[in-house]
Image 1 (cartoon, helix red, strand yellow):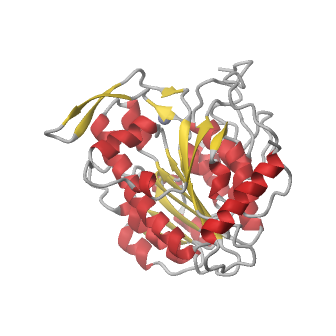
Image 2 (cartoon, rainbow, N blue to C red; image 1 turned 60 degrees about the vertical axis):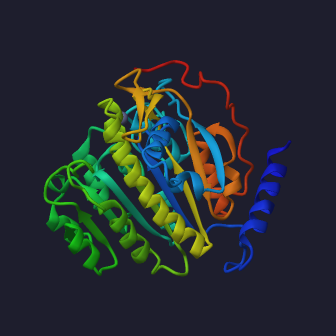
Length: 375
Ligand SMILES: [Zn+2]
């Protein structure tokens, strides 16, 4: 089937599903885009979280309308890192491991966040890691290495991100943030009360945002709530929001199932909130996916007394297995199927009506797109 025909059918289905009360001129298109990345979250991580909540369905499984698979290899490696994984989604091209917002040729490319900002949308980032970490950085910075934190922070002062919440306070200058037009808020209370066109909020003045097990509480969902309220003020043009469940990956690196489960459940509560917003709003496309899987996690038994799946791990690093993509909202049907991670970018732009070209046919089942490995 020709891709263009497929897109037509996909959008047609979407129009039927979401066109009951058309509020945009074209109800098949999304006005708002929310990309939710569970770092290191493969199907086993999701199912371990579900196994810990046997009496209720996770939002990620019960509230999404479409399910696909993203192939995560980078331009340099079969197994991607978070820099290349997030950059593939943010710029629409696979790049080399460790790179941020630049293509494999090291040249900067416009990110989705920058594109939508230029289109007049408001932009936001909410993460449970530092704001200079690889995933958030890949949406606003352009550097050859994820480890160039000071250079990444420099990009933040350009003011492309209207609302940001995370960690890494010590890496930023409050004075420079204020000069760039930001209200700087420290802690959840200040974040929730902040009222300024541009806001940057930090969990605390520490560098790190704590894990759920160390008392983060409902910081992610409440920060996301504030982001949705704040960004929705741009009623005419809409918004682009990136949310990351950052620490699911850290639990995977530790081969610590409980760490993974607590972080994935927290991320799912946030997904529930976002999907509720999207369903009520009717013009919001939500994508929930991962940059890669971490730990080679598999579930090998179930402890009924503690309602926990028993995990086996095959690595302390990332693995090369495809990861699920869950989508809901206008044009979510575009995300059904198996495709390269970089195509998520093209699908999002198609869903907002900003890409009329056909999506180039993918080579979805060729795991060797990383040929010519550069380590
Ligand atoms: Zn990782």
